[in-house]
Every structure is written in C-alpha cells, then in structure tokens.
Length: 249
Ligand code: ADE
Image 1 (tube, protein in one colour):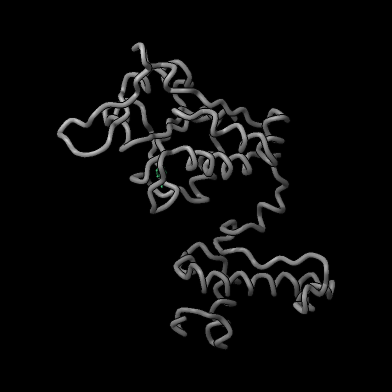
Image 2 (image 1 turned 90 degrees about the horizontal axis):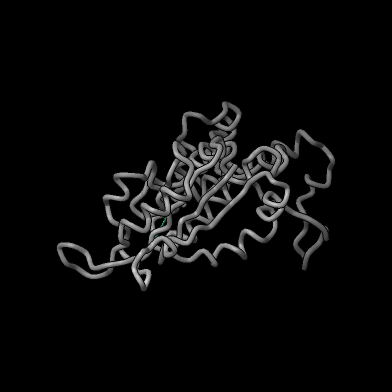
C-alpha cells in the first residue's frame, strides 16, 4: 500500500512514521508513506499558499493552484484523494477497513480556514473527520487515519490481536492485566488465573458489554451484534450487573 500525504508541514510526520508498528511496516515494505510539501508547488517567489476569502470574513483559505499541482504530480490517477476536515464524514473502524482494501490513497491536509472549494470539487473523492472538534490542521487526523489503516493491512499485525480489539466485534474492549498478580492490593481477577479458556472468553465478553453499556451504549443498538452478545447484554441488564441505560447511569 502506498499513502501520499499532501501537507504544508511534511516534517511533522517523520517522528510518528519512524516509530513502532508503522516504522516496522514501512521497513518491511508492507506500506510506503510519502509526505509531499504543497508549498513546493507554489510557483511565485515567496511560495505563498494562502489568501483572503472571497466574500470576506476572518481567516485565510488555501489557494487551489499549489494543491492541484501537487495532486497532479504526486498522486496515482484513479486512487482516492481524501480531504481531512471537521466537516467530513466520521472516520470509523469501518472506514479504516474500507481504506485498508485500497492499493493506495492520498490524504490532503488543510490548514487555516480550509481549502478552496474548487480543488475539492475537482479532485477530492472523500472528506473525513476524525471527530467533532477542530484541530489546527489535517496532519494529526492524517496520522490517525494512517495508523488505523496500516495496522489492518494483512501481515502488519497478527490476525488474532486484531479480532480481539475494540470495535472489531462491535463492542469496546475488555480490561487487560499483566504481572504482578497483586499491584498495590489490587488483584488480577481470579478467573484469568484459572486457565479455563471458555470461562475466560465469557468473562471477557461480559466485561466488553459492560464497558460498552457504560461508555458507548448506542453501539449495543447495532443489528449486526452476534446473538450471544445480545443474550448476554439482556442478561446483564436483567440482573442489574451493568451500568446500563436502564439504570440511568
Ligand atoms: N482538520 C481539523 N480538524 C479536523 C478533524 N476533526 N478531523 C479531520 N481533519 C481535521
């Protein structure tokens, strides 16, 4: 997979891409990421990339010409050009899975008030937001997208750990423990020391459901949840064990 980032701040990416799972995926040739400096495509003497907004109002707008030139030179025709913007469609695990199936794609990072609409109309295939808050630019969002997508590329992470993760089954993840067995008087739950795999699986599923009820109850409304999850969720609500909606917690 090849990911092209178009940005006014290409240096921001080196640290993140140079560490941990992403660095390993790049070193193994499973993914190639190139950060392209939009400013290099501005043809005037001072490489100006922004200008005042037509119609007035505060803030500057990114000019269309340098972005268009960067796309035309650096991007593979036919591949997605994703503009990161708080006005985009919400980026979710499902969207990460869609992007992970692509051969490659481009992430376009805005700064200032945004980019000229005509460049969006001409080149952008998708607009994505990583959440309902406004960042200073698309770069942090691009890193989030790259991280979430690259770990889904086959071979980057082993399948088992992906299947257990939050959202993989439509639920939030269960709690994890490692040594020591007793940390400042807080013990690892006995069931995890029992060696009883089926009981551990059910306990983890129960904890996942409880966590989801507490932090993201709307996820439990999904019709895609497996029957076992529905039944256990109903049981938890009945027994009043969870912190579910029925308790108003
Ligand atoms: N650029 C600024 N804020 C953003 C957000 N929340 N998501 C994606 N891109 C952004």
